[in-house]
Length: 251
Image (cartoon, rainbow, N blue to C red; front, side, top):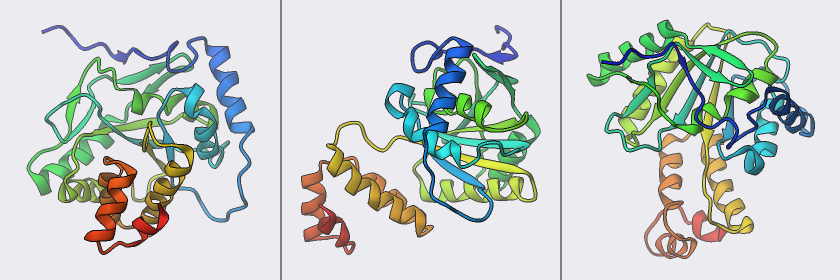
């Protein structure tokens, strides 16, 4: 078996985002600096950020990471989809660190192992390590973290294939157990749609945001499923069968 390299090389630098360190740093700094955030009080413990190429989603991601600009975290847990058709519900990197043009980010293997152990205790399986993956949705958040945060940090990377409510709840519990009491940030990497018009996307995404703000995992999963069909089908299904009539109303 070929040995696994210590550093995961970036498969998307130079395409999904700038490959030159200075150009990348300048672009990320500009996205963050151009963001105008409302006043808020309290500590930020989690952000939601998109994972399209920077030319498409960089400005939106800037708003997310502006909320933690100059903050200092020891550990950042990044949860993202896994787009490749792995059978395993949860995956992580088998490498020791992620590389971007801005430098390397070490993986906190002890934190990953602790989450995996908690999952095995409840589900009978943990987190599958993979090497040389080309998943963009996790890596795309890293340059923003490297520029926004004030100090060095370790990474807890988890890529998710499962849509099973029980498995996802177990992952949430495992993360809660491992991150409790730590100076940690949680980053959720998402990309809700690529094909709706702006007006329709805003309406659908507003419903997703409403479910997130309500801390309703079931509502989030239901809203995600409804995103997979056409807006007309969403309206028809809600008018005829769903108890959540607001989906029909927002269309």
